[in-house]
Length: 205
Image (cartoon, rainbow, N blue to C red; front, side):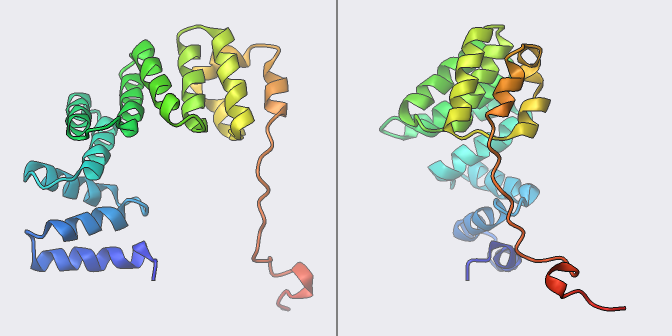
């Protein structure tokens, strides 16, 4: 019926009856990821990898989890293994390596990887924004502004992110900052469920 939240506990229960079933473990990963059951997903990814039953998609997901777990060496190994398994250009590998190098503070290398990824997926506004952040980290403000303007033109309209991102601190001191913020066009939030006092439908006391 499309409810991963409702499906998740049933897949977990099913695994208790057949612990060697890799397909059930992949179903736990698939249903658990969008509902942020990260610990359980991490456990299943670890099991599949350690038992040599992991596929390419789950391997790359495991790499992302590993880097956010501060296991950078493991993440790099997983990405490289996935890249070697795939006979064509693996776009996701460039993206993951960009993130990994950025987290490790290797900004110039991260910039190179992100640009390679953007060459394959040119409309990814989040990568465009990441490139702007990296240029700002490297102190190259002209390039940072160029890529930030491009990200906003592509639809990056997260004002809260822009005014709190520590990577952009140097840009926020510029006279151009207010005009850039003014370009943002946040999406309208359409509240579909009215409060009790709206449309004269409130309950009386």
